[in-house]
Each structure stands twice: as C-alpha cells, then as structure tokens.
Picture 1 (tube, rainbow, N blue to C red):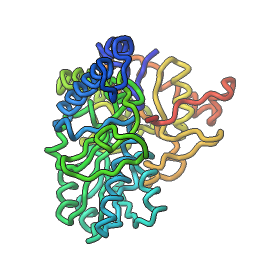
Picture 2: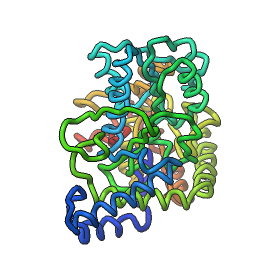
Picture 3: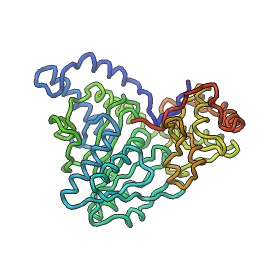
Picture 4: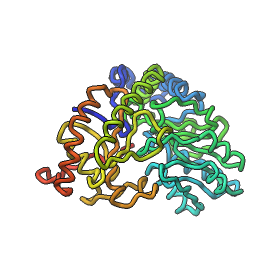
Length: 397
C-alpha cells in the first residue's frame, strides 16, 4: 500500500508506539490522584506538556490538552469569544475556507447572537490583510484564520493578520493543525493569542491535541466538570496519548527543515509530472503552500472516482468532495475560490509526509494517468463492480 494522505493523518513516528505501550503498562494512575501512581502519571503528563510547549515555542502553562483539533478549535474560538462578549465585543471574523471544526464553532457563536464576517478569498485561495483590516470593527472580539489550509495547503500571513487584529483590540486564534510538523512553528513569533494543534497530524496518536493560550488570557471551559488543565478542560487526561504526543513533537522537531525540504522536492517532482496529464489543474497558491500538499483536478474526471481508482491500485489519497448519503458534494473550499460545482467536484488531495519515498511518488505517477483516462472513458461510472466503496472524506479530526 502507498500512503499519500498525510493531511488526513500521519503514521506514528519512530518511538511513539513504544512510548504509548510503556505508558499504558506503567502508568495506571489518575494524574489527579495524590498517591504514588497518580504522581507518576502527573509527572508524565507534565513532561509531555513541556515537550509540546517546546515544539510550539510556548510556555508550559500556555498548553491545554484536548481530545484533538475539533475540541481544541471549539474550546479556543467559543471560549475566547464568550470572554470578549463580557466586554461588549460580539463580532467574529473568519474566512470562507476554514476547516469544518472552525466553521462549526463559528456557527455555534452565530446561533448565540454573535455577528459573523467571513472574509472572501482570491481565485488561488489567498487571503488579504487589507480585507481583514476593512472587516474589523470596534466590537470585533476574535479573528480566527488557519495558518495553513487543510485542502489547498496554502500558508497564510498569520503574523501580519494577527497584528491587524490587535491594532483594533481583537484577539487572534489560528488553527495550526495542518501546519504543525510540516513547517517551522513559533507561535509567540506569530503573535497569536491562541492556536490549535493535533497529535495525529504530526505522527502522534489519534484523539489527543492541544490549545496554546497566551499567558494571562481568560479562556472559559467549553465543558462542565472537574478542575483539570487549570480549570480550562475538565476530564481525566489521556495520559498515554499525551505521552505519545510529546514524543511525536520531539521527533518532528528533530526532523525539522531537512524533512520539509525533502518532501517539497518530492512534491515538485510529482506536480511537474501530474501537470503533463491533459486537463490537469493544481488549486491553491503557487509558492506559499505546505511542502507536501497538492490539490489537483482533472477536467471531466470526478475526484471521488479518481480516488476510488487509485485505491483499487493500492494508493491512498483523499478527495476534494465528501461522499454524503451516496451523493457527491462539491468541495466548499473550491466553491469559495469561485470554481463551479463540476470543477469543485474534481479535486483530489495528495498529501506527502515523513514516510513518503521516491518510490511512492513513482508508483502514483505510474498509474494515475491510466486511472484518469478510465474515469473519463467510463463517463464517471468507474465505481461499477465495487458497490458501496468510497474513499475517506478529506479529513477527520
């Protein structure tokens, strides 16, 4: 099997699985317990907190552990907005191309009476600092914009965007789930007030993540319950998952720029070959893009069926459309870029990562032209004979 879906989840990095197994076997205590077993679990959680903080350039006390990116986005966005509402600020700015976790959290605020502004994007998915400045108001509570887009891979000028928000007294949150582990990440240097990360995107375990919250900032809990995570996230910590998260952060930091450069070279070689396929088009920014992310479409070939064809060849990718109740829904991100429904349904996301090799790219390039041709020739009926099969949705958090 050739795995080219690192934006959905990245396989465990070396040492993470062993750390998980040891934690499960050797740390049975509840980290809130005061006995010896509890203290050992607490020590492990705090060591991992320091590892995650170091990876992000943050302080230990600025890290709040969560169950992953979706919870983290909801905690940060809804919590910061609620705190700002007490000061009379009830306006939130986001964009039209955010991850569903961010979009869902913002929709919950709209239902609670917040005014919402969604910034438009250009045809290549780029965001304008000037557009944000024009949208800011005296009552703007929060701006939430991703550091890197989950479909396009576009990397946004978050430092400049955060500066613009702060100039009008608004807080700034960034969803850094896709950026972490794929590019250098120094959250204080970006000037953000809060950021969300997820372990399984960087080669850690699933169902654990973290929110960075700038020291001194009020962040009410999303859930009601106990006093864990400095009163910000009640519930017994996922000790083994948190330990694995810490190790993954260490491994990702050690790989650093060398890994990013290697993946970028693979992506560029791959894209040159892909664009030789007639009717191929790459979506997103030409340069300011994550090293391993390619969202490509082939005219006349629905992305869902191209992904199924690749799956039949043993190659795992995602699509620019999610399959819901048997119907093809165009990618909201591509629709926001101005693509029509047919074009927006043609996107195929190929995401390279730390496990990707030259031979993986060669395997893709050897079969993709034929898959695209078969989809076109079949008039979109490639799935015949494989009833009920569908590739994974773009992203699970």
